[in-house]
Length: 126
Image 1 (spheres, helix red, strand yellow):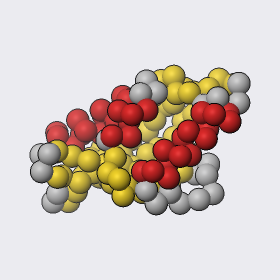
Image 2 (cartoon, helix red, strand yellow; image 1 turned 90 degrees about the horizontal axis):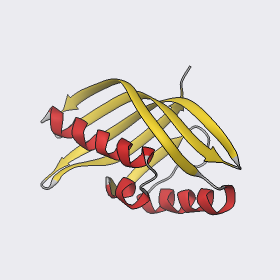
Image 3 (cartoon, one colour; image 1 turned 90 degrees about the vertical axis):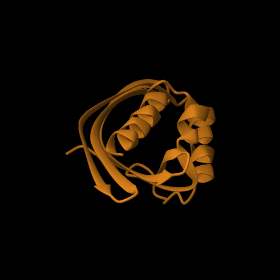
Image 4 (cartoon, one colour; image 1 turned 45 degrees about the horizontal axis):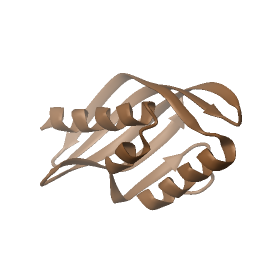
């Protein structure tokens, strides 16, 4: 069961790193929630995050170039998996190439058709 959760999380991370937007968002439940240290608002749904993503693309030229996951850890709580890792993300925004070093928690839920992400929390790496 643990490997299925890890595989689902890694698939989402892979799609994020390749800027495969539709595939990336399909890994999240519609009612998934999101907390990012660089946005003031709590995002209470996948649709809210998708709208913000599109805004970044249109207004700021946002594009992910690569995402490297290290220091992975998973904790199982029944049908819930808590996946934590460090991420190095290379992206372009506002015409500048950036590399961000962050720590992320993804919470996944086991559903009849597989694992789905229900929460993502991203923090700056200390």
